Length: 107
Image (cartoon, rainbow, N blue to C red):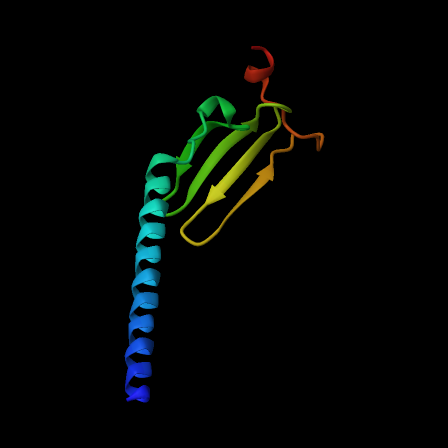
């Protein structure tokens, strides 16, 4: 009779632990989802971007070239992207110096 009573108590404790774990996971999941919805990430404003797009050129459905400049140094770059890769490089003038975006300097 003692072993049978021990099995019932053990089964009862196992059920309590199971339901407490399930309840905790449910509460944690609801809280996580609530914080995900209410604390949405802040989207940066266009004024906060360091690089400004001057023009875009699309060669075909996957290759795209962007002529951009740095708002702090006014140096011009070419940004290339396609389906699988991309890159950025500085534009140089005929003397080998980085090209400066004159329209931004004159503002």
